Length: 271
Image (cartoon, rainbow, N blue to C red; front, side, top):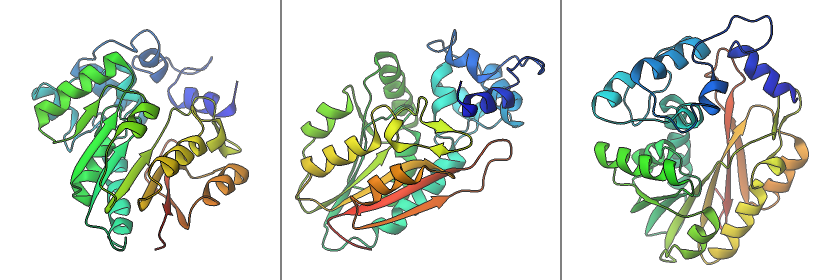
């Protein structure tokens, strides 16, 4: 078992000798994976795992507020979604770089792995693109996210496709900046000691970068790749070699777990 898994399980109180917690992430990712959670369960997960009942704040709303409006999350999306505090920071940093892109008449934000759509929301909120589109292959997640976004009226298009047909099929004017938020499932790519290996995500991040760079070879591209405060040097080098400019930002926002980060990279232009 990777050390990162042991670490997260310890945080969730799910190792032998630790206090059992009612709403640990393993139950939500296992038997509750495709079940809708009620408000007490969402707040319980935040409280038990992170000491904050409002941890799963999304779309700019605390759990009690988004739940009251009819938004619902599955066990898996409650655990996997990018919460507001992190997504807001991503959006701000993406917007700061996007403003420097030369000779563009507009922009589009694309998320090949949309999930809850919350990161798309925050990037769009700060960038103000002409269009925001996410692709989601999971049937259940897609239907729920589409419903949730219609409730909160965020103006985001969620398309029921995988990332490959999604990226190859989307039509974007050549004069627009293409902003891609890339966060595929990490699986066993994260180890507490050695960090995140971009080459072990599912699919590897470099494959998504190469595909997007080939499909949008006439465009200026800005990649925003979800990262971790420790990244394996070889996988980081493999990615940054594909960019004309890059920067790795780390956000000091977690008390009980290691801090998340964001790798920014440009193709076709330089900051």
